[in-house]
Length: 218
Image (cartoon, rainbow, N blue to C red):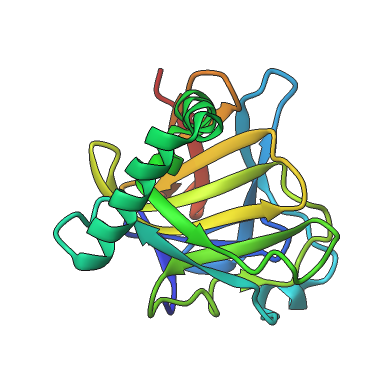
């Protein structure tokens, strides 16, 4: 994956600690990041980085694999779904786990993810994509503070989309979930709460000079 493009003219990228960034394709070094407010909402603000070289400094990426559970027409998908069904039928703990996932992490029912969790005992983010994908040109060395949210990137609109990337915090728990769609739609919530819907845009009129803006749509 050479670049991750949102809403046709916004570049989406990450740092190795799971924080997400946006920039205009016309000014890719002018980064914006997301700030979580004390009201559990998000705002898009100019990213102040003291070391501009970090904007383009790539890293050795910790990457896992995503396997869609919607692939019922494939042999691999059928096997995975059968294994899931059998485990929930015979194990009450798994049934309880499924209820928790449905209530707090409903998107997790769409896929399995395979991560090497033995890489470190310390918390770290794994960047997970379908087989034959990679995020080598999407994740950079910028901040050294763990993101408070995991992020799911979807190709499409919320009602019709497929998951193409996910960040996962290993050895710790996130407080929020962020879903970003290539259409420019964004959903954000604190775990256990309802989604808040946003739209991200590149305001490229003469006065704003490719300013990235985030508008709450509810």
